[in-house]
Image 1 (cartoon, helix red, strand yellow):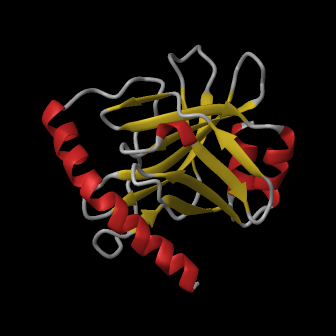
Image 2 (cartoon, rainbow, N blue to C red; image 1 turned 90 degrees about the horizontal axis):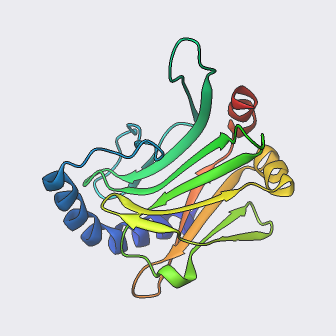
Length: 188
């Protein structure tokens, strides 16, 4: 628990200065969100500057028209409450053509891009993700979810998303997996 408190303090200390500048720039530009990238959902309030997470995985379904099939996705995010900056947003959907799960991660600006991001369920194997693009709301990585990672997510307790800032300090954000399996069953 002490280690998690240090992670939260480190995350807030490292990302807070970046988040304020980027949040102000994003507010000034008032750019509409691209359709392929999910908008962050509201979070529970916590202490200023501390990451806040949603109570669990949220499932959302949309359809292009009444006759079109529903497309569903699940997501969870962590934001800095003081600035509203998204630290990590994970969106998982089932690709309609391959019927395999695909993860889209939104991370903050100011990353050490060559290092990318890493996913780790509990104390299991680390999965490396390459950062693919950045825009005013953050940087993005997307990858299919392998069957072994999906099994670990369904049975795991915590997903750790880690990345490095420009000072090459590793930031690790814990994401609870308690209701992952039930949310995933709704979208598959």
